[in-house]
Length: 212
Image 1 (tube, rainbow, N blue to C red):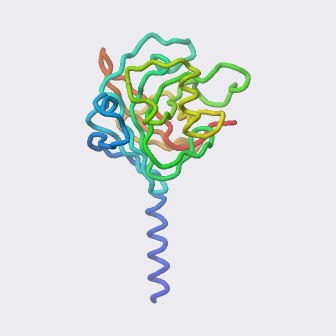
Image 2 (image 1 turned 60 degrees about the vertical axis):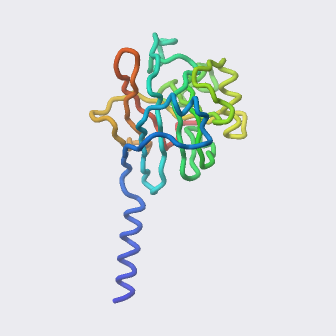
Image 3 (image 1 turned 135 degrees about the vertical axis):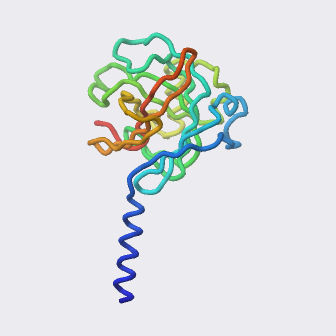
């Protein structure tokens, strides 16, 4: 009987550890590793994604962003290159869209378009990405960077000659905020960000890799 009870408990724990991902709202970002100017630029409410393995990803988007005309016709979102896009925190080891290891911790986010060249052809469903950059190296949310500068900052996160990238995909959900696992086992957070003219719906792949 004891063995059966222990086996049942193990099954229950295993099932709970692999529960469907979900999202909760959180309070403001209070991480001291984030510069004061950055924290002041964040929305007062964040999102916590509880992944299928029980680990968490916290996202604090900007309080407001400046949307603009798409810089390229094949861009999914009307966002300017290097735009500050908030702060993200990984409670445990993670992987970016290319499978690069991401250490637990807090990072700033910057928007960029993937280069449209032979090295990246067909590697993701969209060209829109958020790049992780070290909080200590990016203390002014109003700062604009060149493409090469953003890449260099993000390479400090991976320790490789490739930035830490997370894919933005079309925001086709019916509910915001929400979390969906797609047919490719990508866990996607759907949320909205305030703009100068309303709200912009977005979808960020917080777990899962794209094709190499």
